[in-house]
Length: 108
Image: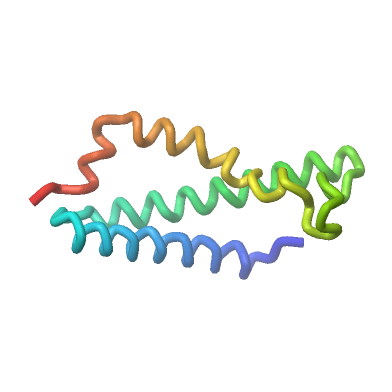
């Protein structure tokens, strides 16, 4: 039950959040971020996150499972809280393990 508008607004909100966080870090830590690269990474992470959520939903649909848990009916269970993180974590691991990644912040 995902909508195109929800997906697009999720990407926009994630991108803006990444840029605002970079702005905050720039003010606190005296660095000059590459805002364009940070915005691209934020948008990409949002898309990966949404794909992880859709993949988990597809798996549930294939097995005829409505929710992974029963503590809060209708909320999907604990795995629904982490399916996006499970998809994003490997990407962030690879990204932060790359020495070039740190270059998105130029230390002043």
